[in-house]
Image (tube, rainbow, N blue to C red; front, side, top):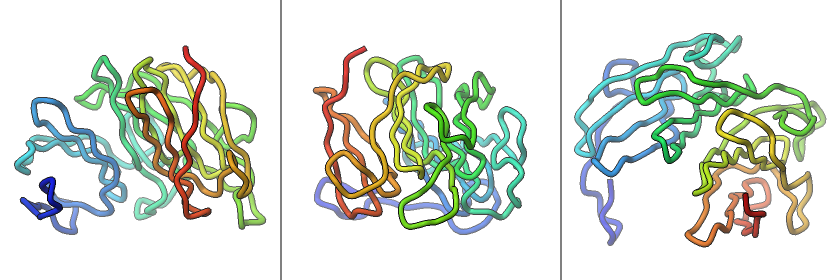
Length: 215
C-alpha cells in the first residue's frame, strides 16, 4: 500500500498457500468500506482482507465447475486463474481465467451466478491467433465494469469485448497489429469519468485511449 507520494505505508503476505499468503496475486477490488478482494492465481482462489491487511476469508479451488478456477490446466499453472477482478454497481464480482477461456460472475461470498466464454475466435469468444505466435492461443485477461454495468474483457487474441453482466456479447474492438486501434496481447483495461476506455497494449508497449458507444 502506497501513499500519494509513492511511499510504502504497509504490506502483507508471503509466498504460500495459507490464509493471507499468495502464489501470483493478480487483480484487486477495493470497496468503500475498506474491504479488499485479491485474486490468488496459482492457489485458484479469491482472498478477502481489511485495508490494513487483516485476513477475513477466502473462496475458490482448482476445478472446472462454477465457483472453481483453472479448468483442466494443472493445479500449478500460473496461466489458469483467477487473474483480474472487477465489481459492478450491484456488488457482484467478475473474474477472468486465462487458458480456460472463461469469465465468471460471483457474489462477494463466492457463490457463482453466471459464466461465459470459450476458446473460439467468434465474437464473444476468447480464442484465436495472438500477435507473435503461430499457434492459436486463448484467454481473457483484464476485466472492468463501466458505469453502465457493461463488462469489458481484454483477451490474448488481441481484442477487447463488451458484454452484459450475464455474458451476452455486445460489441468488440481491436485486432492484431500495431496500428492505432490494433493490439498485441492487451492486458489491463480502465475507464475514466467521461467513459473513455484505456487499454494497456502490452505487446506494443503502449496505452491506447478509445471513445466507445453509449449503452
